[in-house]
Length: 480
Image (tube, rainbow, N blue to C red; front, side, top):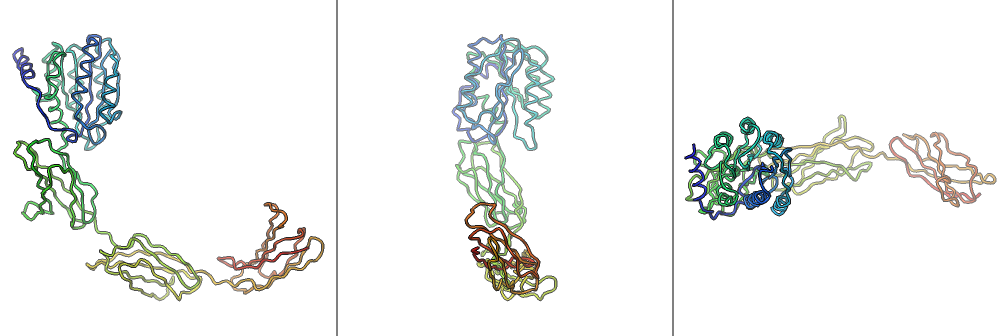
């Protein structure tokens, strides 16, 4: 057992820091740091551990969809220092680590691990990115770690450990996620920087976002996104896509090495496609990324239909959107409800309105707009609208004083068909307030009324009221 310990230590010491390419956009995942914050760790060592974490995480791009980092301190009463969604910039994370205060006390490993379980379980969702628990310990702790760590691994969490003390090698060997040669490190805290590059590379291998994502899928197009590869020897990407790329009939694109997305055009609607992204590089173990998606059914023609410019014998119908490249022509059919004859207008693809004339007054019409596609397909949408009622205006209005503050109002209507009555209103012009306005409704056979308590100058109006609308009225000023 001691021999294995020495091999691990020597391996860590002999591996020099490597020049890595940028990892800022390589990864997506959650990293929860579990830091020994007990009194067994002196303040100088604690500061070095925080600096080590800051250096370790510095190259990553932080935030949702990238890398999220949280910190749990293990002391007598473990504490969540900050959650996974707290910081999304490197400066904010570095400042937070720099001002973290040590808890001291004992190392309550059991409670700290239960807290870590709750945090990582709450963030485990369908198709969730990888999750990592990075445990930094002085090698001595109270309680058993094997059970809680096994539960974390069953949740899909990868466990990595760094021990800065002698510790129990067999216990640490049992709790970390294989392979132990890259996930378990024994190192003196003064020399901890020598494992930064190797530990970061191990983390990258766990959270490297090696998947092709499909976004903005439409009937004839789709956008593919991927993470920039870490390979220094990358020359370009070869992208194959088609309904069946296995039979050699796929489309082929060459994408520059610094691209992380591309748009596929001229796709067939409502069709299943497979896309395969192949990095062109001499580096070994570079995965080919694949994804399958289905384009949307083709939607052409009117999505909304509306009616405006209402009149007693005409209506204007409008529709959106105009799709002149997909639509060959529009057909507008209209007829009165329930059993009127159908009339038809045929319009070019660039037109999105039509004036329907010679209609019956006060009649409901069913209007259908159909888009005719060049392929022979059709898409229609209908709307109901009613023409206005023709209502006669008031023919005559006369006011006759009949005493102090009183006036006789006489009028002559324009027609009796559909007449519901007359609306009489008056306002004392020399009293501009809400209490100076009055009105009354009179039956259709009433052609006169007498108004009292008027002021010296009052405005009197009479309007005929029909079934659906108020007709045009007349107004006069009464001088009493």
